[in-house]
Image 1: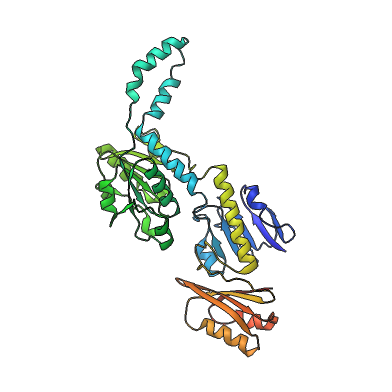
Image 2: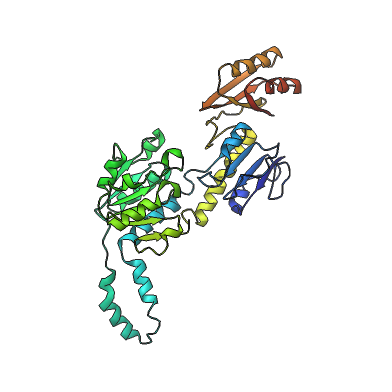
Amino acid sequence: MYKVRTYNQISVKGLDRFPRQSYEVGSDIGSPDAFLIRSQKLQGIEVPKSLLAVARAGAGVNNVPVEQYSKQGIVVFNTPGANANAVKELVMAGMLLATRGILPGIAYVNSLTSMTDAAEMAALLEKEKSRFAGGEIKGKTLGIVGLGAIGSMVAEMALAMGLKVVGFDPALSIDAAWRLSNEVSRMENLQSLLARSDYISLHVPAMTATRHLINADALAMVKPGAVLLNFARETIVDSAAVLGSLAQGKLGKYVCDFPEPALLNHPQVIAMPHIGASTEESEENCAVMAANELMDYLENGNIVNSVNYPAVSMARTDGLTRITFSNNNVSGVLGQVLSVLAGNKVNVIDMMNKSRGELAFNLIDVERQPADDVMAAIAAVENVIRVRVIG
């Protein structure tokens, strides 16, 4: 029986993925094999010795102490792309709100509480509506920084709305490149994109390399009057630099999902309360994906969408036992483990070894279940972090 401890309100559709005959799932589970979380901060929370994996129903994992868990052989999963459609739609909403006089128009209408005559109100609005005139997005250029799961969907949507699309992503993967329309013009650098774009939408992860990617130097390159949209992470944008650019008349508007005190009630800022992924469908998709990732790892040792360990997947064969182990990515570890198995006459049928940075992960299928002393000998191999056997 596998045990999964949940934090936060997890979608029922995700929880229903776990077969009740083989999984115990709940918020008060003791000795859990896995955590399933949304926004719960795990920093400072005691790590059970039984914990094998954590799945975050969402893309960002800044609420998970990934480095600490990596050293303990705990695989951390996220759900990239599961909330992509929700974010994509909000990006379009942000572009329209920044382009048309929608919000000030609504505020004006709601201020007319003293009026009681509908005909008088209609006449007044007809007279005043020019105050809220805006533009159209068709024919404008959208620059997308980051062309992964969300960025590629934003590009497709923008093209359908009649925008021209340029993109920049120095780390574009092969899978992402296949998803991307050939109508998207790829820019060689961020500066080129900023200088050409009427709208700039950010879709890169929060990491050291992207901290304040949009800073004073970058904003000096933007096309005058451009709209900056940040539905990625707050640390990507230097908000002080944004306010400076707005004051100078360089940047036209800033639309973000990450309010800060300095941004509130600014006439050129539209700040939303971090609702990019806050749709029922998105929460369901994230929960289902997270549950599937945990089950595949716990039952088969396969790793898909991990943020700390390499992707590794190998089909199961009936009758075989699977050994998995993580290790520091140094030479000789796998050879020593195989020597232990050979020395104990445990026949290896199939295996896979993958590495990612300083870590490696291994799947080994053997004819029979190794004795406890064999597993202990594998665990004792220098640089092996964690080992387990799946019957």
